Image 1 (tube, helix red, strand yellow):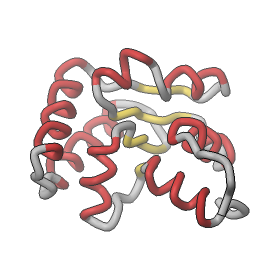
Image 2 (image 1 turned 30 degrees about the horizontal axis):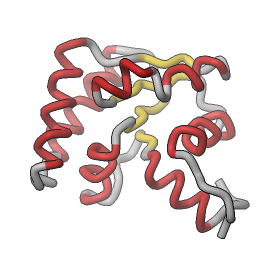
Image 3 (image 1 turned 60 degrees about the horizontal axis):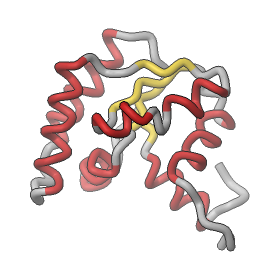
Length: 131
C-alpha cells in the first residue's frame, strides 16, 4: 500500500492521461462543475471535457440528493444520463465526477464506459503499480 494520501481528482486525472483518453464527458454536482475540480486539471493535459447542459445538471443533482437520502436503485436514471451525454457529444468515456454517482454505479457492479474515481483511487492504493 502507498504511504501518501491519494486525491480523487489527481488519481483520476492521472488514470485518464495514462489510459490515453482524449475526450471525457463529466457528470458531476453543480459545485464540482462550478469549481472546475476535474475540468481544469484535465484541460491542462489537453483532454477535452464535455459538460452536461443545465437541464442535465438539474437531473444529476436530483440523483445525488436521492442517493444521499438512501435510494441506491437509481441505475436506470444514471444510465439515461450517461447515454444522453454519450450520444449528444463526441466523448470516449463518461467521468462520474461525484461520489454519489460512484455509489449508484458500485451498487450495480459498475457501468461500462464510465470512469469511477472511487474505483480508480482504491485500485491506486491497493495496486499502485497497475493501471
